[in-house]
Structures are given as C-alpha cells and as structure tokens.
Image (cartoon, rainbow, N blue to C red):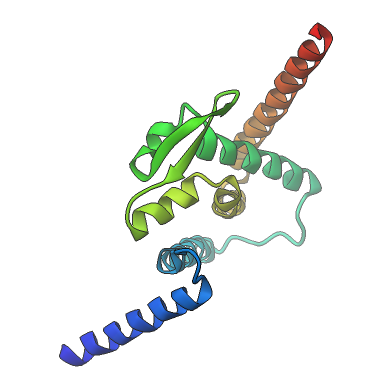
Length: 177
C-alpha cells in the first residue's frame, strides 16, 4: 500500500509541475480537464460497447439530411443546456450567475474545486457540450434511428424557429429606428 501511495504522489507532483509549466501566469485546471477527457472516453466506449453488443450494422455513409438536422439539433440543445435561463437550475451546483446576455440566455462562471469547476466549465460551454451531444446523437441514430430522427428534427425545428424569432426582432427594431 505504501508503494502505491508513493507512486500516486509522484504522479500527482509531476502533473502539478506540468500544469505550472503549461500556464505559469494563471491557474489552469489540467487535472479536471484530464478527468473530463477520461469521462468522455468512458462515455464513448460505453456507446461503442452497447452498439457492438447489439451488432448494429454501421451505415456506409451519413445521410446528408441527418448531418444537417443533427448539427442543428446539437446547436440548439447545446445552447439550451449551457446558456438557457430555464435550464440554469441544472447548472447552478457548478456555476455562479453573472448576468442575462440575450433572449432567455444567461452568462455564468464555473465555481468550486477542481472537479466542480471543470463540470462548471463543461456545462456553460456550448462548444464543449456539442462533443458530448454529437456522440449521444450518433450512438442514438445507430440504435434507435426513427426515434432519434424525431428528436433531432424537433430540435432542428426549434433552432429554425429561434432564428426566425431573432430575425423578426431585429427587423422590427431596425424599422422602429
């Protein structure tokens, strides 16, 4: 047990030194980011395992419409989860409210220790969430293609409706000037 603790403490010290060398001006939470990478790897492996166990046949190519609709769905769901004012209770354990930033969106900052703040970074970043959401929708397309197309189609319609709302608001404000 003592030998294991010694190896672990050496590894921790090496990682801390690497973090200080990586970003001497500001603290970057490399350990938390490494944890997020490991979690994402496990998440992706779980999808791969389930798909492999079901012996789901992989498509030869993506349907172009599925790519576009899934991209719109990932965009909309990523914004909703990471910036939506209505979804702020999901992020609240990991973030601190800063300000309202747009129609039904808020700006938040990560808070807490290494794990908590890393989760806070992830859940406030639509770009970060998009990787997880794309993985989810890709696996779901393989296992439940009809249900997934229904969900991604609905989210894509929401993205288009939001775009139309913002365009309408922009036009009415421009005409009012």
